[in-house]
Amino acid sequence: MQLPIVTYPDKRLKQLSEPVERFDEALHTFLDDMYDTMIASNGIGLAAIQVAKPLQVLIINLPDEQGEQERSELLEIINPQIVLSDGTTFYQEGCLSVPGFYEDVERFETVTVSYRDRHGNEQVLEADGLLSVAVQHEMDHLAGKLFIEKLSYTRRKKFEKEYKRIQKEKKGS
Image (cartoon, rainbow, N blue to C red):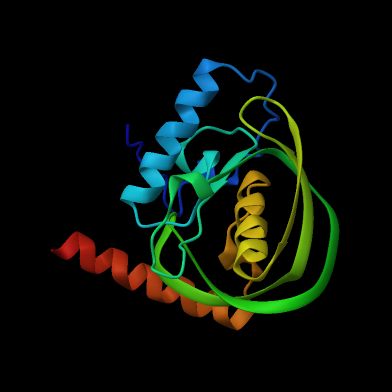
């Protein structure tokens, strides 16, 4: 089932997400609904807070060389913690909660993340490239942060101006 995506400037996106304590059927259904929502929205990642649930849950499904997102490649990351990080990289990011905006953001080049899967089993993920960026982007959501908050003052002001202009256009049409 598709869930509605919370979009900027909705204050719910600022909420801190709570750790998951019950790895039950309700969580599994929620994860499945998050997947349906992400795929229907052409996303590669989604945090639970983006569908109005302040839980430390995120999913990522990067496309393969053919641009397909195989369900078997889906990462369901619960209660994540970065245990190692190294290097820096810039990557152009977008966000389902900030539709239509893409900006270069500085992130760690590689991260090692400990987390739990849908069954509560401990897992470790070593990520680099787009996967590393996606994990950090979604983890920011769990802390109530959006990628636009990582922009320089000038670029943030430019974003705010552009965003207001688009909102006015939407109301006018």
